[in-house]
Length: 314
Ligand code: TUI
Image (cartoon, rainbow, N blue to C red; front, side):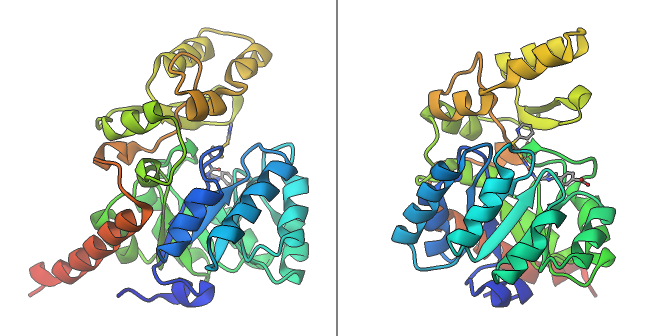
């Protein structure tokens, strides 16, 4: 059993979060993770308020355990979702792809536990000042929108930057990597890519198959030119995007190329036009299994690795 400040703060059994993956992390996946003792998180992504409200209500009907909502701050609906979490009495909010300072007072007044994703020491310090309860330090190995630093470099620096509990994310899909995160000073882990293979994860079978068959060099980062680097599987779409990016396509045309691409991957498994977000650790994901089995495998492996870590110490 691994108990840390984050299990105590949130009232959860395991210090393990499921990442807020846009169009993927719905009420069903989040409630399955929460029922299994982790923290399930519904992703608001770019979705409007009514869609997210529906997923929150679904999760409430499927679990009596705590769950969270992730707010993607670049979304045109971010302000609406910021209100929604207060209206719906959501207990935990995580944020990504931006600075959530302007919402902090309203969330804290509503008694919400706020855990922003940070990819730099400066944002970590700012989040401490504006009242964050904990931080998620997400390295660039992760899928989706990525920062500059890797997890092994970022986590200890975020741990040292404030006295807040830190959850490590990016490149973690098994017990070995989870144990490494604890050794870096994290008190919890967040996984996205590993949960893509969960039975309760409602993505196209093509997407799941691509993750299970992925190899070590299967992802790439596109979007740097527009200032929004995104890690995804190498597919005909991502290669075409990369060619356009470095071939001088005008910015507005390049932006249009990506419109709706996440949805096309998740719902239709469309390899030509869909963007299949995934972390570099995808090749470690070997089979489809329940969220509960994933959590048990990672936490058992983590304990075993941590106990075994003493074997070189004389
Ligand atoms: O947000 C994510 N991952 C995401 S968001 C997303 S949807 C999207 N679609 C198209 C373009 C871009 C995004 C898919 N995946 N992870 C959390 C995360 N946040 N990673 C890095 C950051 C981050 C980066 C810079 C957070 C804050 C930040 O600085 C903001 C500032 O203003 O200082």
